[in-house]
Length: 211
Image 1 (cartoon, rainbow, N blue to C red):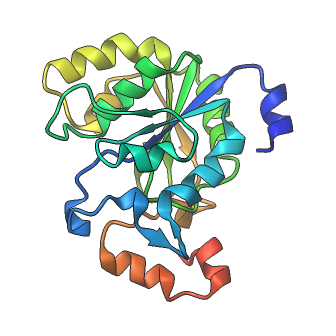
Image 2 (image 1 turned 90 degrees about the vertical axis):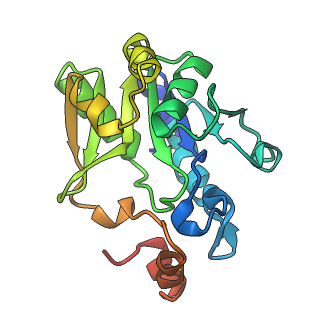
């Protein structure tokens, strides 16, 4: 989606980049700041999501000054101890004011350039308050579009100790967005081996990774 398409869209959408996890499988490194093809992974994500939304916030629980250099507000979870991505999503809804919030993780640098548009179309077509990507094999609940009317429900779920994103999503009126034409776009770089495998691909492969 180009800025022109965004300008003609009938509703406003905020973007949330989730970068607040522990990254245990990465040895505890801050995944968003780990380099891929010479740049921190979060830069690849921001480059893809920025043209698709009206504003961006970054959810980060450490290295906030480093994330702030990208020129977007950096927010942290309201409760300590790394409570998980739902806490980051809750903070994102509280920090933004657009009707919709598009959520993406910091470790998936190959986001579709029409991701938000397709999520929004499926949500509106189903009169749903939530749209989640399906990559052809499974749901990808961290690639989602959430209407802010779900803020109260999400706040109550998190306050009651709820942590699993898929459990919360299953309780909502949810649309499934078929993105099986781009399954590699939802690769997560979770381990050093994942990163090394992508770095070993040719330059063209890094832009359009092999599924």
